[in-house]
Length: 124
Figure 1 (spheres, helix red, strand yellow):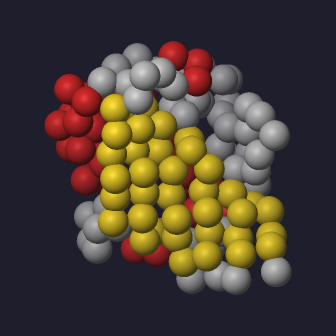
Figure 2 (cartoon, rainbow, N blue to C red):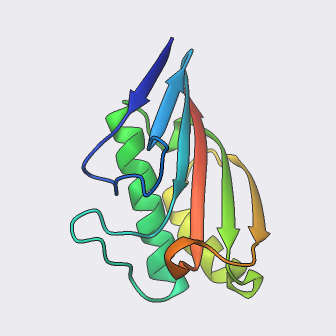
């Protein structure tokens, strides 16, 4: 059975999609831009933006009763692949235990001019 997961601790969707969907024990978290859910602002710099995107993901995970060790895979979209090392350093702080599988791409552009967007798949 499909269940929609939503929390005010992460930014609302900016389009016709859900923050996350749980289906048969697997949680699919939509791409999270580095948007502060309190005021809609976006921090400057890849480190701060990576941190905000991951904070948003972790807020959604928490709402679903999950945490870092439940994340099986992430996808990181970067506006500039030169930010890979800086993003990686912050990313590693959020996954100190078992690391999820991951892909990382440079893309032509991201919504709202973001430098990074991250999605996740997690399971119970």
